[in-house]
Structure formats: structure tokens, C-alpha cells
Image 1: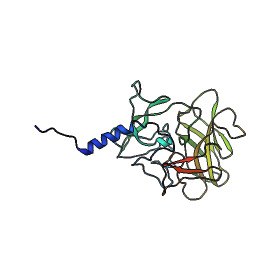
Image 2: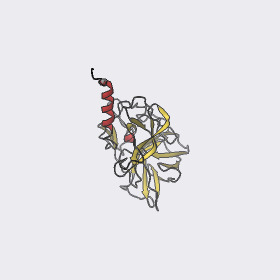
Image 3: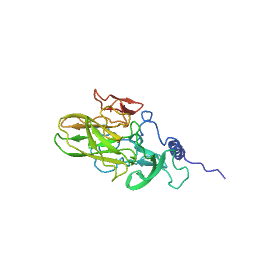
Image 4: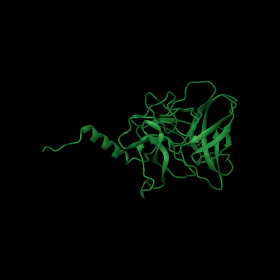
Amino acid sequence: MARRTRPAATLTLLAAGLAGCSTLFPAPGLVEAPADAALQSDGSLGADADASDDTADATSCSCPLGQVMHAGPCVPTYQLGCGPGCEGKAPSACPAEAICDETAAHLPCDPETPAAACVPSQAMQIGAGALRVTPRTVAVGETVELRVQGAHYYIGALMWWVRADQEVLTANEYELQCTLKAPWTPTKAGVVPIYAYYGGPPPDQPHPGWGFAGFVRVGDGPALRGQPGEACSVDADCEATVAVPCACSAGRCGCSSSP
């Protein structure tokens, strides 16, 4: 009797799924963009740049076999998109300094069905390319609630701050573990860099603990380009200012992390 063999396409998909398991936490700036990641008109990776909900709703129907769509607020920006899942009760579900978050992802092509994925655990300082901010366009004089996501914010004796250019805002991290919220009323037009910081009273000088979350456009102007940690290319460049230089490196936007 002739031995049955698997179709070549099936073997290819299995290999792709296994390969993804070895890259749970790719280094920012050293990651190739997911093959199915759709760049939005403002350069964001698979997410509505002005969405106010708690997830970056990256939708796809073409993840490799066995992978899930990383899209939750705790997922670092550079990790959004297709990737491996995790089993929460497994002794080695995630690498060191990481946790298996049951709602960090969803099934491909099915945003309503949550799935578990590894995300970094609580931290006081956030790595480059992890944070993102919404909304990304506001009007002069309009009071908005800035939301900075992409990390599991440590809650301790001190507090978190959000900095919009030179204005420091008190952040609320207690309602949602992976979302900093801060009200802001911009007074002048322009492209404003947004940062997050954990510690005591806001420092007068730049501090190494400040994490860069991206840019917000105040007033009219062209759509913002790629933000830190997002996919970029020749056709989808990165947003930058004179004060905050950014560049596309190995398929991801990388920016200066200090104000």
C-alpha cells in the first residue's frame, strides 16, 4: 500500500507556525513587519490611529497556522500582528519577565474571540517602540483624554505622568492596567511628542525613565506617518521632528526615547 504524504502547502504552514514560536519578543527595530500587516494611511500598523477603545484592533485572516492576532492594550507596539499564543497554566508559558495574558490577542479574522499571548510583565521603565498614543489628531483648544498603551504599568508608591511636549499631566493608571489616561487641552497647533514616566514629581530636566509614545497632531495638517515601533518602508516612512528624530530601521520606526 502506498504511504500517504502531507500536501506541501500544509507542511509550509506548520513550519511557519513553529518558526514564530522562537520570536515571542523580537527586539524593536530588528523585526520584519508581519507579512499580512496592513499599514493605515497614517503609517500605523493594523489599527485605527484615532480609536479610543482599549485595543488596537488589528484584523487579519492570514496568520500562519497556530498563531493568533496580537492586538490588546498590553501588547507592545512592535509586537502587534500575527504571533504565537500561550497556555496560561503551562510552567514555561512565556519567557522570563513575561506573562500569559488571556486577552492580549484574538483569533485571526475573529476579533470577538479572545486568545492568550505572552506580553511583558509590570515595569517602571518601558523599552523603545513599545508605547503608542491615541488620539493622534486633535483641535487647538479641544480637551481630549490621551491614552498611552503598550505596556503593563507598575503600580506602586509613586505615580505615572504623561508629558505632552513641555506640559506634564497627571496620569490615571488604576482603572486599566495597560492604559495611562490623562486629560489634555492643547493651546497651539503643531506636531507634539508624547511621553510617559513613572516616579516622583516631574523632573525639570530630561529623565532616562521617560518612554516615548509617539506624536499627536494639533490642528490641521497632513496625516501623521509611522509611529515608534510601527512597520515602515520606503513607501511608508516614519514621523519625526527636529527635536525628536526618527528613522526606519529593519522595517520598524525607531525614535529618540528622551524628551
